[in-house]
Length: 254
Image (cartoon, rainbow, N blue to C red; front, side, top):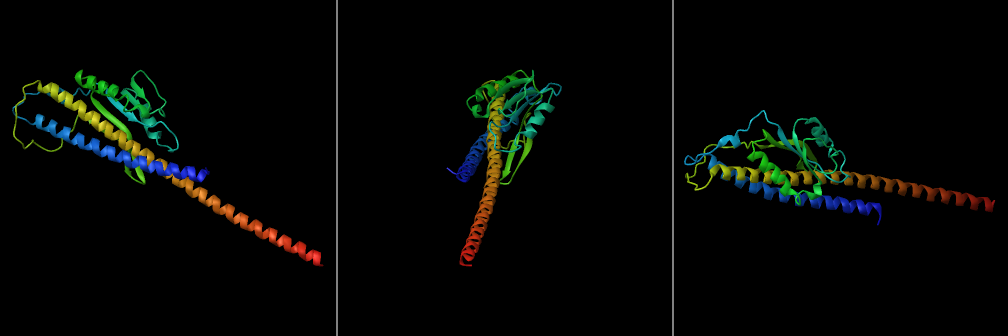
């Protein structure tokens, strides 16, 4: 198979993966909104007594930062900003996702390949759950490349915890729960953070494939330019041969 055809296939596959990732992100976003709605109902319910310490963590405690990079090349400087941020955050607990980030210190609590994200997601969930249960962190943040369009993405930081509730008092009817409400609240917080993280991973994967699509498109343009140059050179050589042949024939006649 010609290089041009290989690059065309890579470009097409990148666009397909981007589209699939965005659809996955939409599903996780919808679930996250539903969980946020349930959290709001509990938070603003006058009938429930809550231990709100989980919502107001100690700001003196370290942060837990999650960095989403990737495993493979052919996507330019996709990991540059993430790598710089990891090295900058000296005092934060770290979960690093993606083999392209070559970093380790005593605060790295988990490092996995991007390909193993869903396979090993229970490990991430356990770390998040323990951090909330033990009140051991002040924040949980995720750093990743956010997809905006077919031509742009941006390195961003999203705060997953503490959860910032938007809107005011829940307008529905108050209710009673015959269980440990604070435990339910903690579990819901973990679910919310995990679904938001899955959404960020999908959006990051879309951004990765946008860049890969741009690079392969640029490569196709260069291949086309090269083909045009070779075509013109071939035409030029044919003309030169034709002229030389005419000169030789003329010499024979003379």
